[in-house]
Length: 186
Image (tube, rainbow, N blue to C red):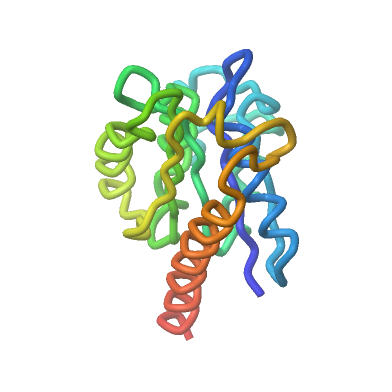
């Protein structure tokens, strides 16, 4: 059994990628894993001026976020594609915890309102994660036309069987990475 944190990166009004995060949360709850949804909209962080380890008096919600990431065996990042990249809210928390990402298995799920499923954001997000030595799982889950695929509460709106299959592969690959890390640390 693993503990998985899901970061829902969008903080915009009317966001659709959050429904994908809810779908993943619901799917994980049906397994033996535990799951923790970290919704960046709920945290409503300011732009950080410094990494957590250098903050003299970090806000309690910053410390809480850090502890929840540290507790996770693996992290799923669910991010929309904004103008070919990812939201500033996500870059903010990646930079906040640079050391805590080292060696942590991270899976990326991208979503877009168009047909390309956030493929451009993958390239943009990989470099900062590699730079801080996160273990980015090679497989990803990409959601095209997210508004047509997932609805409120994570409901699958079309191709239930296909999304179930893609979600299973995505989560199994993260599970493999988490198990490999456990064995390497033993």
